[in-house]
Amino acid sequence: MNQVYLGIGSNKNHPYFRINTVLKQINRIKTTSIIKRSSLYATKPLGPQAQPDFINSVIEIKTNLSPMELLYELQHLEKLHNRKKTKRWGPRSMDIDILIYNKLIMNTDKLVIPHPGLKYRDFVLLPLYEITSYGYEIPKYGKIMNLIKNL
Image 1: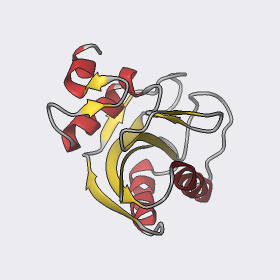
Image 2 (image 1 turned 60 degrees about the horizontal axis):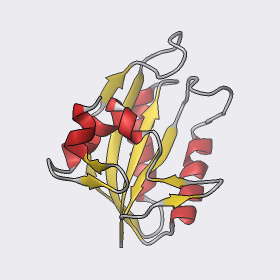
Image 3 (image 1 turned 90 degrees about the horizontal axis):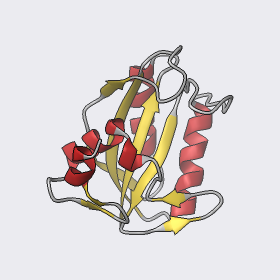
């Protein structure tokens, strides 16, 4: 089984409900189960501020799916939640990112692991820290505590 961390966020159409719903849906993906989940964090949007705050969480899953198989499953869930890519950093009904996949470092046109923005985002690092540990190391980026200190 592969150890994977996912970032989940929503700021449209009842985000608390959407996140709780998508967690149940992730548990229904073949050979995949949620191991841990962080608290929910309300955060200001990264981009345009004229939109509602985001509700974010990080979960740890175990899965037998490859990174690309998992990506396609997660994109399917985003579509079920009416995710529409209208503008960069705009409002989203559902956003699910593969943050970390084992200790894999991957860079393709469709998927970059670890997620390239995670080291700059408190709404990812803090919930990730909550479900890992003080000494947890993110592939390519180093210890999570050092990244948090650099925010």
